[in-house]
Length: 255
Image (cartoon, rainbow, N blue to C red):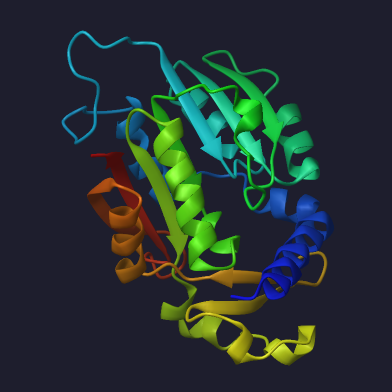
């Protein structure tokens, strides 16, 4: 992907989240089935799963949530009584403001938040070389244009986390109701030749109208990303949406 195209799509999404932060927050208050299903990886249920702490490992859990949005997962952890030190990272200052406000009264989860642009080299610098027990990144990598950029960020994840890395990817191309909403590239001055397979433009029409760039990371790309990032793919499953399968979840760990 040409760098000028990448920057055009990144700016489109920056503008998108500046426009929709409030209505987006309103639609992201409740835990999804997929988020509930990954709670065992954070100690919320049976620990008979790949990647759980072995006997003798510290009980104090550290969690890095990349693309944390409004802090919904921190609130879910707290509701489940899962004590941890939670760090949320997001590119939207508006969503981070909402996250900070929504997590002020949590008792089991200690929160801190940072703004960072995942597309920028050195975005991890402000994390001060820390390593976390768990890393979560849901519905975020889909906004990074270009395979090389997505791979670079997942390699960053491998350096940041010593335990399971939990990712999710929106499978919008598998849904007729979303395919019917695809916006032509010409609306932003691009054409199909400028993009990669799986790239798309989709509208937002809740409260305000806006356009976002998204990329579908399918299972084939997921396996390639894991392999090239030096990560072992421990498990995958699908959940969420009206169809019950609109998000592909993946649990990975360093080899």
